Length: 320
Image (tube, rainbow, N blue to C red; front, top):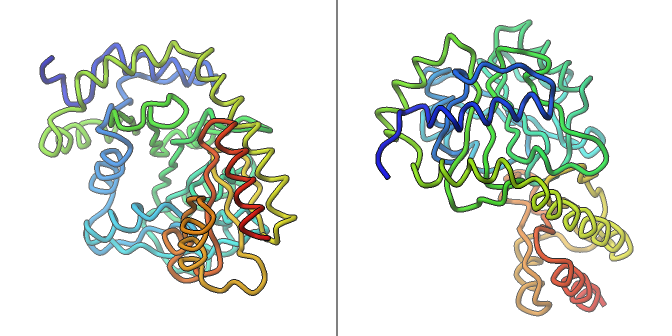
């Protein structure tokens, strides 16, 4: 093992480009694919390449907390968009119009913590909104491949200048290998390469080789997705009867985001009691929405069917 070129092994970049042909019918130039140390490395490179200190980037709450934290660490202004359950907690142009000028919009589909997805029309509207205002569109597609009723749409199908970020961590089951990728416009390649050379040198050589194998493991990976689909069905059937409300559709990923039962006002305390007394681990909504998260929590169903069945049994017993 040694250093690879900063943009990643050419054979892996070609393999990732081929994935877009298989999934989306896109003929993607592999030169535009940048292999990164996890999706986190891709976000750092994207934000540094696109924005100057003090500029504003809009993103929906609830959302992955590292978005806000990376933006703030780079002296960028994370502009909160209050998502609503009626729109799958996703941003919509009408709400974006109220936040003033921004230099970028970050979307996630499927999203963490909600699992909701943007339809083609909804993503197209957001892409047009960005193009009309000269704002960069950054699309987090790390959970692509994990959808249950309809395939996810990549932003590249609608806007060839969108910056797309993905990873081998979720669908490809390589969590911890720290191997991700991004697709950038051709005009950005050299800028991103210079940044990657100085920040990371390259992604792990060993992880890049392993990722090549993961690209060909379709039968195994689809088997994982089938397990998640059954877990999702079990959890979505149980939660409404236990008093959880405003449940996001969970179109993809492996999460369910819900409002606490009536009378419960503190998600942190609720999650602590559920863990200590019920033996079920969940995540407080405050991790994802610092304003409204005290009334919400996230369930994950990324475990075996037996574990999810046992988790639901314990949850039912805890709720009385």
